Amino acid sequence: MSNISATYLGNLQVELVHNLSGTKIYTTPTPEHGGSGKAFSPTDLCAAALCSCAMSMLATYAENHGLDVTGTTLEVSKAMTTEGPSRIGRIEIVFNMPNREFSSKDKMVMERAANTCGVHHSLHPDVEQVFTFRWSD
Image (tube, rainbow, N blue to C red; front, side):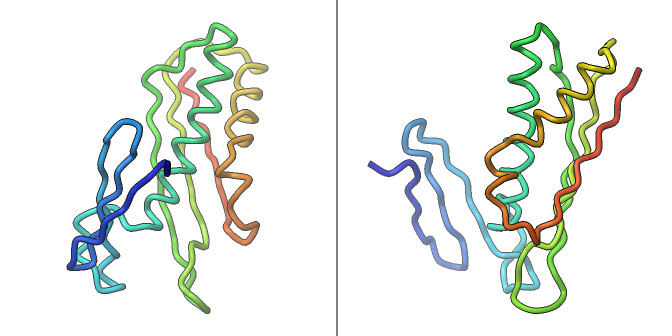
């Protein structure tokens, strides 16, 4: 059994179903590629996957060490290359960490943990990945 099922709905829209949970998401190309821009584009999902994977790794470390990172917000931006075939050139993620007292060691290790995610290591090295951490204390 596959993990994800997809159906092309027409008008450049694809419905994706997570088979285990039944959760659905939709994609459409960006307007510059003929789409409506009314849903995630496939490359948006790639940037979102990096974001959620990095946050999951950071949170796993935090929870395993009694640290609470609930309320962390992330800002994700994606830039496509301007030359050659259409591809992601840069993904930038800003981690806005909650206002809690974390030691400098905890901060350093959580930042490292974010960089251990599988999506980070799966993207081609030409995709620039920038992680910025904003600590409030």
